[in-house]
Length: 437
Image (cartoon, rainbow, N blue to C red):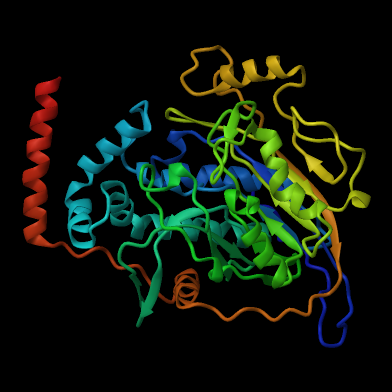
């Protein structure tokens, strides 16, 4: 497959043209993932490239393009090199197999940093997985000539020590990385409000600080990131609005059937349909008439082991910019949806809920895992920005150096006493597993 021609970039505001409006296109990709996409570096690169290829027919040749990918699209990289875990059937079994497979690397982290086994596993594998994730995204941003919201991935906090990146102990954020068309870093944003599946009982991530959220002025909007649940939270939206956000990016991975009922923290008793809940995020942020004019909310679909992911990707904005009223399934039509990917069916609520159960992981139905994928785009216009770019954090300086090839992630140094203990524990565990079989 031939690479796309570099996208021509129109003139942007300069000191000589300070009042030029910004005309640009935003693109939201709704992909389907599977565990097999993460078992090798080649498979991961192919899956990520496929999303840019889906975007390719929608790229505008006469203006900058912003492509927005989905939440936690780097999380399953822990499966890399372990096809057996990808076929384990459940997340818990896969995690156990992975921990045993990588015990010599994960156990020293667990003992030294006093973290949970699942966080120790991710931290132990974070060096090569961070490099693969960032370099893949960098290369795609360059090749397709786009501004790229990479989605999000579990990333440690780094700082530079000479030409090496040094990892901060214990810390592992759900983090979005923003790149420009040269593959250079614009900035990063950490998820502040974690779901129960992201907390200690699940993949065990570190919540980001609210004060760390910033807005990044670019030719494709004054970008603020609110990863999934963050876009539902008034403190996050308020902070981004205070800093001048005009385009909200909401990468998402909704881990439930789209037509099921749910209760969101901090009020799980407030049960409603998933699509009703989603109206309280991007759509509400742009419908409120505040400083956030547009929002882009791509959602990943697909059954990952025994986990179900589903949703409807959307681009929202002022009612005057939108076509006829429309909305998510199970909700009445309303103004403000500039683009909306249809769900797999339209119909009565009970029928839609049944279809959601059929699609879900482990349903055994012929329609299991047959979700809808697609791409949305919208052409947007904003006045010129007068916001200054925020200063880079030490973590951003480290990632920027890595992306430029000016720094590297060193391999983990073996701790021989702990590795000996790891081998002993691994042998005992393997013996016990063998007896159970």
